[in-house]
Image (cartoon, rainbow, N blue to C red):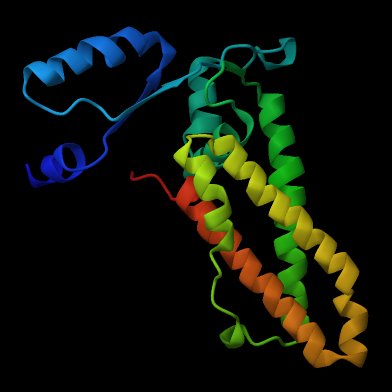
Length: 217
């Protein structure tokens, strides 16, 4: 009862449902709440559909159970699926899904985007003996930038902001040339790498909150 009072009576309750529930959630459920003397929902978010069954000829071999066990069930794959849903699907429109789209998004943005950046920065930090204890505090500046998108339930735009930051950091790595800089300005190179490490921590913190927390088994 204390949680109910905290989150519904004294909070700002939000309902999130598919577009086939528009009438039930926006009219019928609100009438039931009012008749029970309760506060109506503050916000109702109506989502589009994801067409999970729009397979190409090469993907028809994935039966329903095989898809669940090989793609959706393992915990790591479920976290990757969360990323795909947040980044690639439109929040208020119908969106397609295919195995090929899933693979392309993973390779282009996670493996070759965030993955390569993290690998390069961590390798430089270890090679040049940068102290992890001297890192600047996580700025949380990225959290502030994407907050407006999260408040508007535009999670795909929030993910776009994260990958814009990744692209900016990639450019920073290229321009600063830490491999050459460390030979003539070791302290300056260390400062650049510490900035990159702190920025990666910022990205990890935001992603952790958005989509990469493990599901409860």
